[in-house]
Length: 179
Image (cartoon, rainbow, N blue to C red; front, side):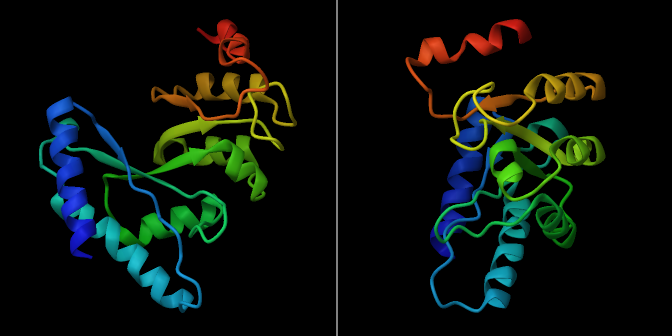
């Protein structure tokens, strides 16, 4: 707990120096054979700790986006469960990092979730399903989603976190029509 507390304090310090308004605090890897109730209680207590350590001052206070990723041992859940955790923490500076790749794999209706919860999303990141490649290589209808995100007035960043199918520069061709 002390290591986490110190790391968060250092992260907030760096964010302030750099003018960074958001930080991504990952849920982390769940130790094997630990009671899920203990994991839940520990997870819920951590954002509250981060909230207490944040500097006051509106836009100058870093807002946290929690990523709920899937992978071996990673404490993850669909967006409805992630939003319920955020509600339980009751911190106005805690937002959802909406990873469209992971949420689609976990069964989210991407368009409906974005439309219903856009105000609670602090950051989005993308990759196509099923192979985590650039948009247009899989089953996600990115043109429809990008149009929806624009129509809803999202002003945040959308990060591209994918494995290129070829050279990185070539894999960025899809973005030209959106710039």
